[in-house]
Length: 144
Image 1 (cartoon, rainbow, N blue to C red):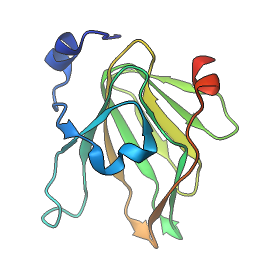
Image 2 (image 1 turned 90 degrees about the vertical axis):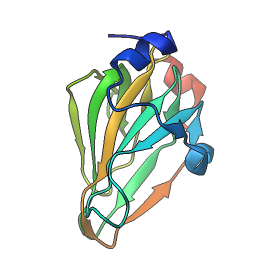
Image 3 (image 1 turned 60 degrees about the vertical axis):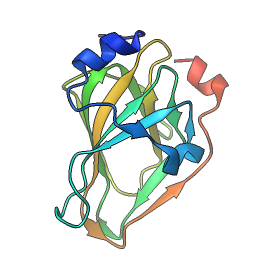
């Protein structure tokens, strides 16, 4: 279900919006928010609820790994998009799970007319790194 109204969205965003995602703002078009669900250093897996305002999306990026690795998204509220390089964008809704293999160029974010949240975590692996790339252009995004 799409949510343009932030207050209505917050009622269904069970993991909470969290704080402005200032540390990664340079890699997003629009505003995103981060709510860590596990505490760094006390859990071997970092889980965070990432919330995107309508129209917000992250840049193309790659989760590199020499073995293992990648990213998993669990969609929890609102509606969004996921796209791998060279493929059509996939519409995302609550309950959907996206398994992103290591070394695959991709982006994800909200639809133009809806807030969107997903839980994100990086799959454990060896020689992990993230490479942030170019922004998803308004021209590309507006075609969706």
